[in-house]
Image (cartoon, rainbow, N blue to C red; front, side):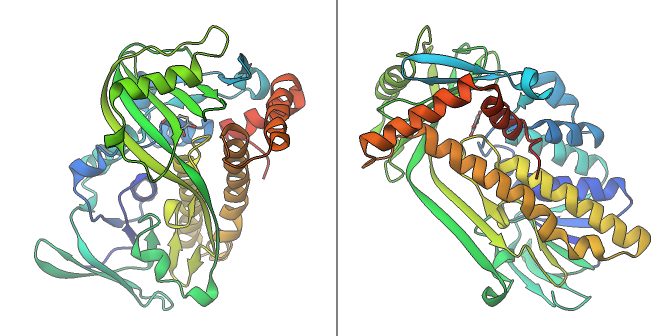
Length: 390
Ligand code: DHB
């Protein structure tokens, strides 16, 4: 079998790339190890930057996001018993939408299916061949058969544990990594929102985040030991912890609900440079990871795909290779900006075991500054909505 662009991974990066290429008349096949049901139900973050919203809308897959997502013009920082608002729209002219990543996935899968796009679920034994020639291929097993997909380009959108990044020789790559000694405990619950806007809370017991999914479903997180197990946390214990961390801030209180999902995520910063080798290009988590604070992960994947789509389009339409050649360099500017922002927000908001009283006061001083200086608040806001200069 032959296609122009072979895409490994049906996450936001792979599916969006396939859809955008289709809109430009470029053919692709998407290979995914999981099932459609699995990718459409995996719980991830839910904040879409302005540029992500715009791209989904331009690509004709933004209708449900607009109807069911919630447009937010600001968020709150809670610390030292008080709450301060970051006025995203007032400071930047832009906003964000709270809309779950798996809903974006559903919209993209529906668009690919409607266009008769080639999407193979449940593939195994994927391997890449000839990526340093102009005839690369992907071998895999699907429904009991050995298959080979010949293509012009292979795009690795298969996440941090996928086969794609590992296909770039280690000697040509540099990995940058930081592992944080804490994780996030996430819950989904039935009930009304606790707040009109997201609340990021710094508390001596640890960080907490109040987010939302809809009028009846809420998403909340609190800092935990990454090695802890959800089985150690009864609903009562979870609510006690969230109340302790969030309610102590002026006028703020969490509204309890029926918890129907619990998970723990570790926190890591990671960048692979380069993000390309020969005819292989990486996008999204296959090339970089951010800790969740600030919700940059999916937005970075979408930004990679925007750059890659333009580069592939320039190749097919104008026979230009310059945009492909500079893909990593272009994408990495935005990635490092987001890496810094996510690291910075994480470091400012979390309880760091072993931090000295001096270091704790620095966290508070930084929060005071971003919530009182218009210049500092603007810097935070433009990173949050995703329009910071890079
Ligand atoms: C959500 C996740 C985040 O990491 C964040 O910073 C804000 C919101 C969420 O899942 O709603």
